[in-house]
Length: 190
Image 1 (cartoon, rainbow, N blue to C red):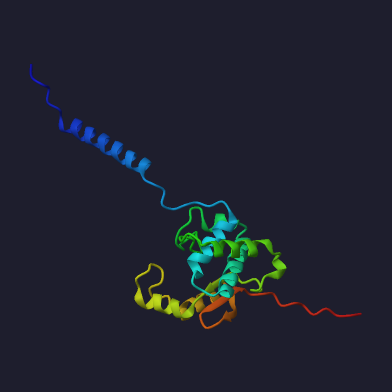
Image 2 (image 1 turned 90 degrees about the horizontal axis):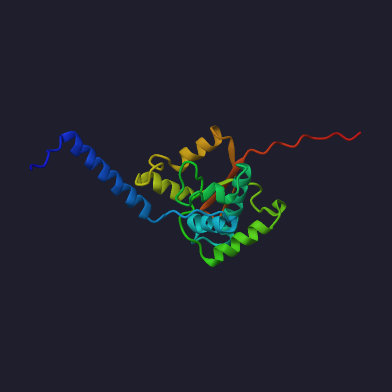
């Protein structure tokens, strides 16, 4: 007895089913390479390592406070803001959290999170950048989002589009920014 011949449509459906099953098996077995954190201390420690890991302790301290301020401004926990899942800076993740932290970064994060907002050394800064590094990245054009985004262009956009202003520089390499502060109205004494 002869085997019935399959029609091309049946063969295509069979291969489609095999392909889908194979993709599902790969997807289910693939390890999750981007960790998610729910702990603010661990998430903040990842930010410190990823954004300024080789910086001075003072730079790390100020970056940690800036991340804390940004999370408060966005009405999110630090973990929600940067580790849902953790990864490089991009739209929806304003700071990088892709690198696993060292114990010293965890300790720095614990100290910053334990202090009241009144002890913020940044004056409420919510953003920071390294002007030299920004220019290098803009010139190289190798990283998405940096091509043509020189320090001068970023500074102009942050001022005009976002209404931010520079607060201060820490050394030659780190500039801290935040929202314009409302001027205090003079009160008259009667």
